[in-house]
Image 1 (cartoon, rainbow, N blue to C red):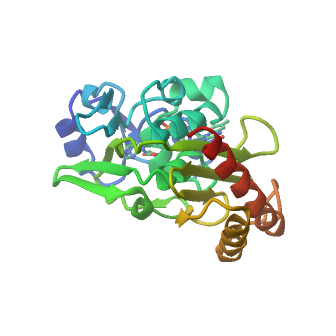
Image 2 (spheres, rainbow, N blue to C red):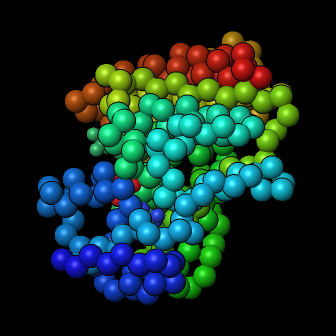
Length: 267
Ligand SMILES: Cc1cc2nc3c(=O)[nH]c(=O)nc-3n(C[C@H](O)[C@H](O)[C@H](O)COP(=O)(O)OP(=O)(O)OC[C@H]3O[C@@H](n4cnc5c(N)ncnc54)[C@H](O)[C@@H]3O)c2cc1C
């Protein structure tokens, strides 16, 4: 196996035109998969030295652009205005534990697209946009369309997640992320990301191949319970060593209500 460490995106794009080439970001998921023999790329293209994949910028329109190589630890320290930013920072603080947070990256996590991971849920709730680059050019995909299934995204052969763009700040909005896990630092059994302004928008993670999303929700107990029950019915959760599918379905309405109420309190 060969390892390349390009300095520019164009070099990386050229290297990724090779069949069996794969990006290496923080290595926290990819190296484990290689050790288990699940993947065996002939070429690893390290993204570590590509400066344009780093940096966090507040755009003039109030949107925030986060380079794909931003680490979980950097995201956990984000200090910019807006509900979407605080939602992402809350999620980053509960990804794994410090050693993983120092190495793992935003781009690596969303490209990996584990249904129990934290960022797919918060980026879907925040209606973030994913910037994707390749030798063919740049395209932008809404988070709701980016996550396609279990470890499956809209990324095509040779494409790199370049950045994530969070939408401009909404006045008087609050956000909260509720993650139910067996122990702190583990993947979620169920997670809920909520943003509340005049109405609520939520995404549910860990309960199917991709996050479930609902918006324009009235913030009353009755409405939240109804929507929570509907989402639980629509969900397709796994049964695994962490919890049964029935348990996951059962906790969705209560966890959703808790996230929405916490977001409302932060408005
Ligand atoms: C013990 C442990 C606990 C964990 N707990 C959690 C948790 O609680 N919550 C959670 O969300 N995650 C958790 N993770 C996963 C962690 O967040 C990883 O950091 C993340 O999934 C992968 O990010 P990475 O930068 O390490 O990517 P890598 O492992 O380097 O790459 C992962 C995949 O993404 C591809 N890739 C990487 N970067 C890009 C890019 N920019 N564009 C296109 N493709 C790319 C790679 O080719 C590979 O297929 C845990 C991991 C470990 C080891």
